[in-house]
Image (cartoon, one colour):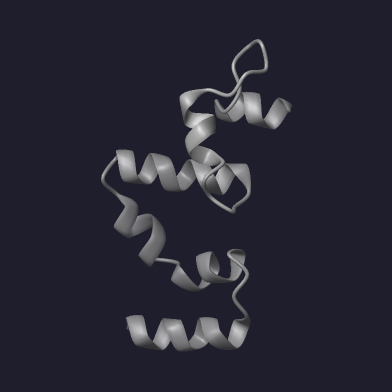
Length: 75
């Protein structure tokens, strides 16, 4: 719970914040969920998600072979 509070997903009473409600929509680690949300808010989602697509793809559960195919298609 401490990590969620530090990330701003929980308020001081332990209730979900608006950011926390957005974060639960992503099947990701809380820190990665926040990164995606903040990247969109700061208009830099392209840089955050496309510079390292293989890493993000594998974090989402993709296998290494498919990540290589994805990387070749993006280049």
